[in-house]
Image 1 (cartoon, rainbow, N blue to C red):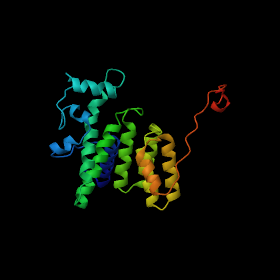
Image 2 (tube, one colour; image 1 turned 45 degrees about the horizontal axis):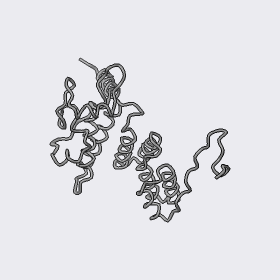
Image 3 (cartoon, one colour; image 1 turned 135 degrees about the horizontal axis):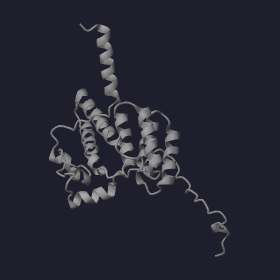
Image 4 (spheres, rainbow, N blue to C red; image 1 turned 180 degrees about the vertical axis):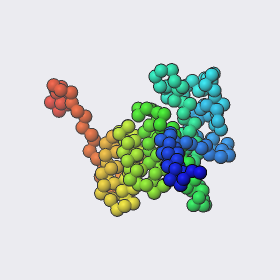
Length: 234
């Protein structure tokens, strides 16, 4: 007969094994046509499942376009597009999490589902993947919904590191800073975002609402030995 200590040891081994495995992801149930219509256009060209009908043996012209845009790993592995249906599932979960009138359980199910699907996707993508800034932004938004602001701020910062002129993370950071009473920091964040993305209307509007001044244009670094514009003859 197995002793209690042996059973505990076995259970501990199983839990450790589960934690060492890649994140498992479950697609949202009963995806509607309306939800599909709100997804990015590449979602319908992802492989099989609930969104598309593509196969790895024969690509349609629509799929080929997105395969080229997203790239593929070296060594002849499947293109990154074949991982993106899980990200599309995450976006559906996020849509559902924004609905009014959700129960606490429905709310948590939506946002935890979004996190699981997104993390499942991220483990297969390189740091320089073309959609990485957007995906990190959305991970931050999910973490905010799950009441984990520190993790959210880290994700927003990672999105900025991935693409400095990608303006949405600056707005998310600033809004959180305002919510915790750090208005001055929020203004600085918006000003920094506008230095990197001067045409971002949303940042301009938020900065105006907070009473902040528009930042001075970022000075471009002059090449070594090159004359500055002010020293050149007209």
